[in-house]
Length: 114
Length: 118
Image 1: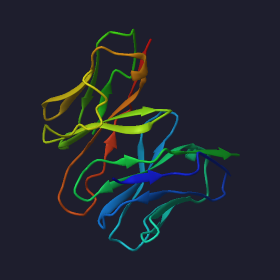
Image 2 (image 1 turned 90 degrees about the vertical axis):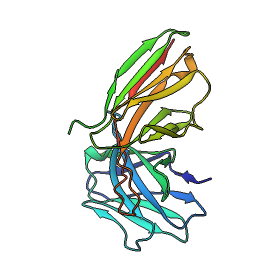
Image 3 (image 1 turned 135 degrees about the vertical axis):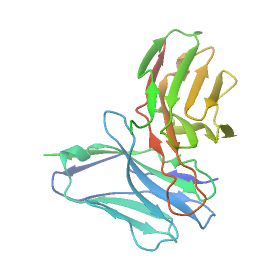
Image 4 (image 1 turned 60 degrees about the vertical axis):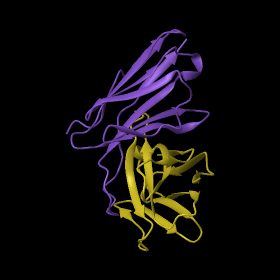
């Protein structure tokens, strides 16, 4: 079975600085998707970024980018120019190619200080 | 598009009572997921449907939990009888299930239903 591990329960960053959230996963599959979701205090789960395993190029979405290392089974999220509104829980998630269900990590709480 | 709509947003009930949580999918989506979030266990998939058919219900805790899709756009999650350990936030999510690798199958979540069982 696939598992997702987020080893950082909490992280903090100063406004305008850069922070990297870690995620590792375990799978025997070669085709899959990886996601980062953000959950602010409103508790709404919001998709931040996604990566297809067959793509070597790292996904980017404005200030958010990933470092996808397939051989190492690592999928970290980098937030550049951090803003106060980035404060939230961040969840890494895995999805097999042949199923729609997401497997989530335990989350990392990100605090942003002015 | 109004997104995935869940009701109620909050429910407080007493142990032994029946609880029904409701979810309306995004129009055109054909996959429906129920997740439960607690501090101790994080986000757990309870059950998911594709084209109204339950595909994987291995996460349903026990027989007290049941989920249905009476039509293509609506689902219910019922707990009967409820227990204090069922207290959690229950999320519904939907997606349009495809067979290619385009990534179109992104899950969109509702705002969640916070259940407190006293």
